[in-house]
Amino acid sequence: MELIANMKSGEARAALKHNGRVKEFFFESAMDDTAAGEIYKGRVVDVLPGMDAAFIDIGKGKKGYLHRDNIMSYRLLKEPLAEKKQRGIKSFIKKGEYLFVQVVKEETASKGAKLKENLSLPGKYCVYLPDEPGLFISQKVENAVKEEWLEQEEALPLNGDGLIVRTEGTTQPLDVIKKEVSQLQSLWQDMILRGESLSSPGKVSQEEHFLIKCLAYVPGEQIKRIVADTKEAVETAKAQFSGRALEQRPEFVLLDHPENIFSRENVDADLERALKPVAWLKSGGFLQIEKTEMCVTIDVNTGRFTGKHGLEDTIIKTNLEAAAEVMHQLRVRNLSGMVMIDFIRMHDEKDRRRLMQALEEKSDEDPQKIRIAGFSALGVLELTRQRSRQSLEEHILEPYGTEYGKGWRLSEKELAEKSKRMLGAWKEEEVDAIVLEVPDRLLIREGKALYEALQQIAPGRLFIVSAPTEQEIIVRYAGSLEVAAQRNEALKAQMKQRGIDFRF
Image 1 (cartoon, rainbow, N blue to C red):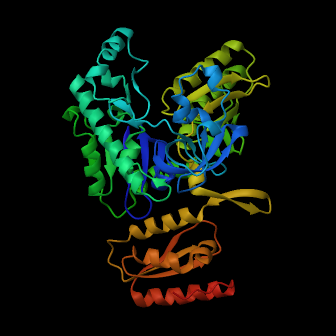
Image 2: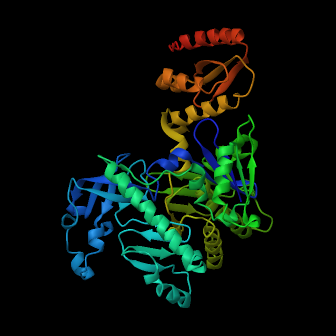
Image 3: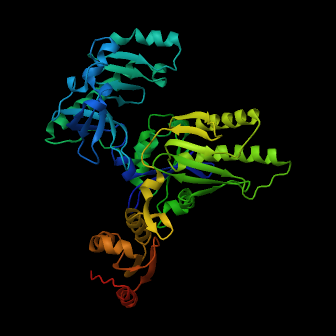
């Protein structure tokens, strides 16, 4: 696999590619909004006994949701479980109090982040549990090895705290684990101090470099090549692999070129395809993909594929190809929650089992947990995929009304980022002025603020005009200041005819 990082001009982006095809996209702002694992100092703003839950202000976004079972005083209470469950949430938490909480599930367009008070700080070989005592060993480890490690509990500097030793950690010397535990404990003390200095809710976990966050989603040994367009990003990536043997490190490439790295590495084409409701199969069939509030629906169609050996053969071949493509699309679009897939109807139970097996094999490649429930009574296959960040659609698109109903278009935020990237590509060119054309809706809403932000990126004087398009960004002219000013006046005259008049 290879990671392509676009760090120049505008929001940082990255794409994970395998065999020439993008498998997953990452965006800086999507990973910063209450990302899973981040720790906050929160304030209890409401306690709801009927839901056994509390709402927590964490200083950003919507109020987070904390269930009673994830409150430390409840978890540590030494009572039989049946008795504990009879206790209401008000026995463990009070409105107005401050506490450290960790994001379990990120917030969505309709819900706040799901939180827990039983914190965990992940390291390379172990996970430190500041408030939950005990030594725990990965379930994947053989019992004999597990017993050996459990005997080492007193030798570890836990001081009453807890620790989970990862599978890879059980192959390391005890001194390596001790060192990492000390590092994680120091990190936790820093968070406590940061939290104590805050007079209101806010984030206490440290900010990580965007590339480090991306690499956390992929096992390091699978990365064979990292390509970035800034020296700083390449050096950051190198530092992440410095502890590995030379033959185990990926190839690091600095691609410092005026052309956008996503275009140069053929990533933009995959991004554009991933935003369309239809995904084509090589055979000529296609998937129709739709995301609703309740679930994701995927309809499988044979399309242009007619097969060569009869209808049943055509159906199973289309369904098997579709199964692999469904798993790819879930990951590349970052779709989560309940997924309903309407495969072409198969009457043979053996073919159904074959299809289920194909889905199971492909689901193992996804870093997010996927549970395949099977076929419903109506013949629709049901599965769930763990949420990880915003979906691609949520991050880049926005709904809008049309005369035919609801449609989707690039959001104003994405249009602004696209404008920055386009001007960034001209940064090293010898031009005195640029005339940039953006959609009317972006100029009407952003106006002077957009102009000022873009002028800092432009290589010379910037003239910005608009057109009645939905999502096209165009450099109308780049060259001499005199000609640019003339083009600007001509285009401004067309804007005035539409009732749009800006003076920057």
